[in-house]
Length: 302
Image (cartoon, rainbow, N blue to C red; front, side, top):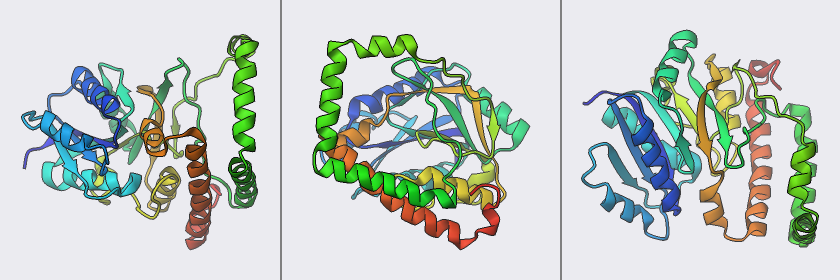
């Protein structure tokens, strides 16, 4: 068994250009020779998985795996996670969306230094977006008493979506916004966003997560109880209950194009939003059950 310092795990679905840019960024920027890329095609109906397999058939740094069915985010990634762990052997697994890119020349060095310092189980980077901003996302999970309110909020959005009230509102917002140059006005009055500092034991963004030997030696991937969305929340609960540490380190940075694969899967915007709302409601129901399994272990977090 060959030993790699880090394996990059990329879940591909249809959008081939983003996947190729992701792979190119790794090859161009990675600061260790002992790396490998595992690309998992999640049963793309446009045959792009086979196209990628043919393209990289002679590339010793890339392995392409083809799923026979779409296993969702967790299930699809778990195929690659288990391959990296059991077939390749590696110290770290970097699970990346196919619409993310490495933008640092010392990416792996930062990971090693953080692991030596904190002995993290899972590490999350600072996420840079295409508009030049830094992604601000919730680094905590919903509290138990917040779930009902969030469920009511999402149900209202789903009703507006099905009645096309939401689509009309967004169309008018976009059209009027163009007329009055709203983007420039909003940018002028927008408050400066202060980046988050380094934090421990927080919820991490699922577009890029680095798993250390602490996690890899105990688990064979992600908890697969959700098909799409909510994986970050489940992972956070799993880490807390197993006394493992998550770390958000803003000195580690990636670029995220945002939800390219989801957009390809959904097609029209209103269908994509409806899909997100429906999956969000399923996630809330799942989270409530997950919390109830052991409320004591989550004291102080929910």
